[in-house]
Image 1 (cartoon, rainbow, N blue to C red):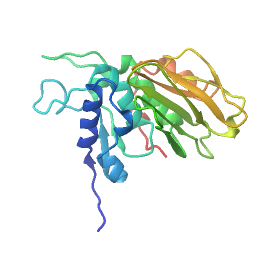
Image 2 (image 1 turned 180 degrees about the vertical axis):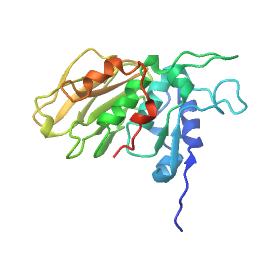
Image 3 (image 1 turned 90 degrees about the horizontal axis):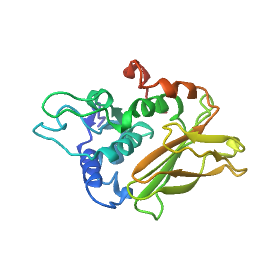
Image 4 (image 1 turned 30 degrees about the vertical axis):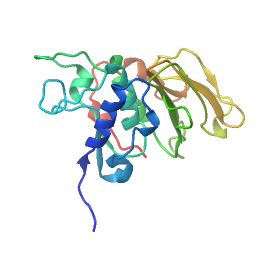
Length: 230
């Protein structure tokens, strides 16, 4: 039987809520029991929408610090069809007003998907429950790739392979939260880091499109940038 429909991944949303409200929760379980894990081609992944926002009947609390992590997980990986909530991007008014989420960096994550989230994916979930990472290695026509690392506890660090073809390149965090530079070694590995309860997305600092990151939060049509991640 061929399934020709998609569903909102509620189990994944509940995992985001559980992980964000539990101290030192195991990030390696983030996809456990989710639709995107079982049927990635049928999963619409969300962090919040008009039904789950504060004040609604199915409000699903997600702590503010965790939203950048959650959006990185739905926007930058191969699986699922991510849906960005208007209220997270532009803020919300009314009885439960909120500022734009992700410290105003959600636009940067959307643009990072559009420009760099292509090609082979490798997970670095490892033995550390509060720090996980993954890489995208690019494709023939979109060679840049990216490395993503996140922590829901203290500062994180992981040695991850982005490919020997990137040896000698200098990578920086497109979100600007990590100021250090990472030089890719001859074997294609780099030692990437993130701050505590945060996420960083590392890309070659000379990559085409990096200049648009600084202006990503100003007057842009987000849906025009939301293409499927290959």
